[in-house]
Length: 182
Image (cartoon, rainbow, N blue to C red; front, side, top):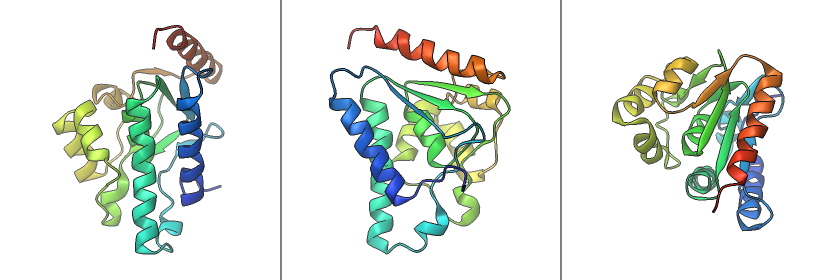
């Protein structure tokens, strides 16, 4: 009900699930998508984060960073951006090996608009994947970008405007990656 926002419990469960997938020899590809077709994720749940202690906030950032690192360095990963993608959702997209998005979704790193500079190792991953110019634009201005701009910035590889085609494309891509030598 909060845009698939990421709280400490959700991030902890996600990290455990991805770690389990990484160590399971029967799993060849990790696919990450949001619940429903409205939001991939609106990022960290700021309302909950503000109620956490400083240590818990630090832990939240470390867990989110771990997920990005696991996507970046682990088994082949696909991020299926099925809706609004903000904050850590953008970071997860950048960290994945392949990114498929619905056209005309909102993509944004809005943290700077709340006087927060993004952490969770995202500046390093974003600079490697998006380049310095795009990383600066995304992090310093906090403005939304189009899916075409996201393609230019290497946040998105492929788009579609059809929900059934989107799901089919994600499955076909996962099946292709699963056949490759590891």
